[in-house]
Amino acid sequence: NILCRPVLSNAMNRCSHFTRFISFKRAICREPGRSIVNGITSQSCPQPVFESAARQHKDYVQALQTCGVEVTVLPALEEYPDSCFCEDPALCLPGVAILTRPGAETRRGEVQHISAAIKSAYECVEEISHPGTLEGGDVLVVGARLYVGLSARTNAAGVEQLAAIARRHGLSVEGVRLEQLLHLKTGVSALADGTLLLAGELIHHPAFRHVPPTHRILVPPEEVYAANCVAVNGRVVVPAGFPRTRRMVEERGWPVVTVEMSEFAKVDGGVSCLSLRF
Image (cartoon, rainbow, N blue to C red; front, side, top):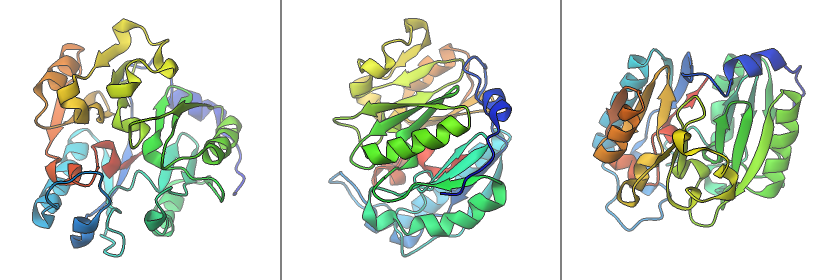
């Protein structure tokens, strides 16, 4: 690991549990390659159509830009079919970035390809090492607390390493054991001021029982895919085609930006998966 000087005030200022907006200035995205048709999937559905995925990705980047974010778009990596889901090989936190060690072995090579972009954006970069595994899709930031899914992709050793790094930067970690979801953020998103969008097994999960009803938005079972969204600078980027979830978010006072995600959904990708935001 690369030891860094903690930046505690920065962590607390940018991660306040009680802020109305989640603020990001920059994001990193990676274009999908034609190899996305070979991406990892748990579904029996048609393969993604590359041309449609490329168009949806451009619209996604534009949505982030509409939210006031400066986006760096990295070129496709054909040798890594899932590499457009750049949230997994790295984790961007206030004061520190972490190069992860994906639980999916076929994705571990993505880390070295995202490393340069991360190191150009952060002075402090640390790493998860063997035997730990950690994917960014398992990490939910709520204030100064990181909820981390213990999943098929993230193990206890990875959570322990992340917790040690987090402590040095004024952040805390709570493990969340998953039984059904691929990643933690498959079923939960943070919408600022402590409000969580929850779905599936996480609605009644002990890790989130402390969240009062006023700060819960419960995604209906038929719209569970919409539980993964991104709050950015006072807006919420939500997948298109889920009207009930969109309406519930808007009723809480957040303007919604919708993005088509049909091609990425075919390979288990959600809205947050397509970017690193900081």
